[in-house]
Length: 68
Image 1 (cartoon, rainbow, N blue to C red):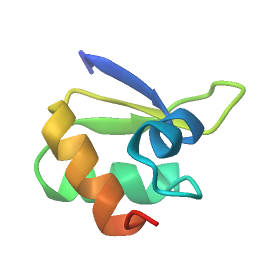
Image 2 (tube, one colour):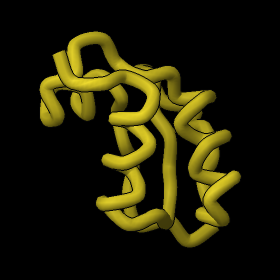
Image 3 (cartoon, rainbow, N blue to C red):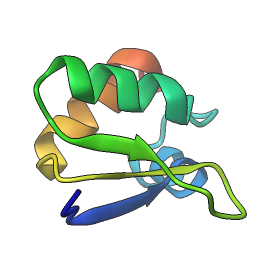
């Protein structure tokens, strides 16, 4: 997969002010449902890779973990 983004979900939650980080597994599943390439990574922290646009990533993250 040619992916533009490597997203650490702990950082994503901080950037978006959504409290606890969303599940990387759920993020990948939802992005795939939207037709975006996404897969889990084997990195030391919970993360995923995706070719999705930043807007799609934010939309999915907010749908899983609304802002506090």
